[in-house]
Every structure is written in structure tokens, then in C-alpha cells.
Amino acid sequence: MKINPIILFRERLWMQVVGILTLILVAAFGAAIGFNIRSQDASLHEQSRLSSHMLTAAIEGAVFDALGAGRNQDVVQQLRQLKEKVPSLDASIFDFNRGITFSTIPEAAGKELDAFLTSPAAAAAAHRMLTDGKDAGELFDEEIRGVAHISIFKPILNEAGCHHCHGSSRKVLGGLHVRTSVETAVQIARSSRNQSILIGTVGSLALILAIYFLFQRLVNRPMQGLLELAGRMRGGDLSHSLKVRGRTEISHMTARMNLVNQNLREMIGEIAAASNHLSSSATEQASALEETS
Image (cartoon, rainbow, N blue to C red; front, side, top):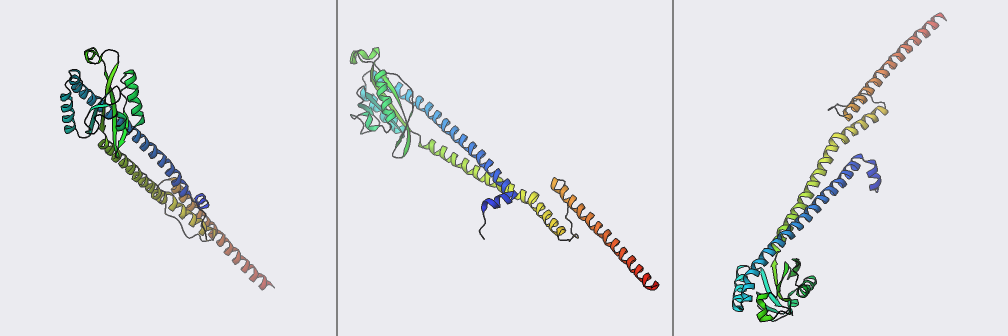
């Protein structure tokens, strides 16, 4: 016989209670995990932004002075040392035509900046910066060979100290592009996120199972006993009673059912006694009538 789950759900109180509580728990844990994930992403992005700004400011202070003095070899040496100390970092200096002049990437020198940008938004931001000379301080997410990176741009303005070489007609001489890998931080955040999901899932299952067993022990089992007692009473068997445990509503109901069973048993006993008494009286009267006859 095929069982209809909808009908079974309607006929089982424990299914209704556990099902509703399960939905509530799933919604609550899902909201908590989602909020946790958003908080981790926001924290990761903010930490990456601060680190990138600090790193870019350090590179800017070390390289721009050498550029202003025309010490190009010092710039090359500084970028080489920077790459040796921080292998996950790339820094490139490009001119107003977006051509890369110096870079920690060996094959980048002499090529266009756009060839090394994987984000269209980053390329558009570099173009805007070369046009208006404004430092927006915006971070751009990039993925290079499956590894997460963030990029930031700093303009190289045509200041008074540069006019003797570049003149004063151009506002922006070029820019600095700094790109760092955030794969380690992303992996840590992903691991923390997976742990949160795992803990939430295990906690939800444990709580659902606890609710199920508690409901079975405290509600369903006593109700089954009451139904069995009611069935025996309906069949005329009044010899059974249930053991009362605790002082809950179901315990009071069990005590009342036992009391009803006892009262019925006493009432039936009294009726049986009265019936026997009537039967004896009727027999005596019949005997007396027979003797009289």
C-alpha cells in the first residue's frame, strides 16, 4: 500500500512539530551563516584595502624619489629587491600612454599596461586616472591563473620638480600599479566559512534529533499509552491503568484517564452487584410463587 506523505504528515503530530521547528532552525542558521559570510568578506576586503594602501605608499615613497632624480637604475634595483622579498607582489610603473617602463614582471617592460590587467574595471580606472589625475584609492579584484589578486593604482603627477624634464603642459606623467595576492587570506576565509557551515549543519541536525527524541519520550509515547488505554476501555477491558510520571499536562490527563477507568470499573461492579441482587430476589420470588401455587 502506497503511503501518502501529506496525509501521514497531517496525521502525525510529531511530524508537524519537528517539521515546523526544522524549518525555523534552518532559516535561523542560514541567516546566521549568511551574515557571518558577509561579515568575513567585508573584513577581508577592508584588511586588503588597508594593506594595499600601506604597501603602495611605501613603494611610492621609495620609487618616486628615484624617478624624480632620474636614477632609473635605482628604480630597477628597488623593484628587483621588492620582488625578492615579497614574491606575491607585482609593481609596475607606466607612462601617460599606458606603456610600462619599470616592472617586477620581467616580460612587462615596454608593453602596454592593459595586457597585464584581467579586470576591465581596472583598465577603465587606470584610463580615468591618467586623464584626471585623481587618486580614487579603489581596489580591483583580479584572478590570475586561478589565484585571487587585488590591484590598486596611484597617479604620478607632473609636479614642479619634474617640469625641467617633462615640461608643465601635462598634468599626469603616468602611474604606479601595485598588485598583491590575497589567495592565503581567501583560503583562510573559505576554510572559516566551511567550518561555520559544517558547525551550523551539525548543530541543526543535533538539535532536530534532540527535539525528535524528546517529543517521542515526553509526548508521543504517553499519547500512545492513552490511546491504547482508551481502546481497551472501548473494548470493555477496564483492568488496565497507566503509570503517571511527572506533573505535566499529559501526566494530569493520564491521571484523569486512570480515574475515569477506575470509576467505570466501580460503576460496572456496582451494576453487576445490583444485577446479582435482583437476580437473587427474582429467584426467591419465583420459588415462593411456585410453593404458593
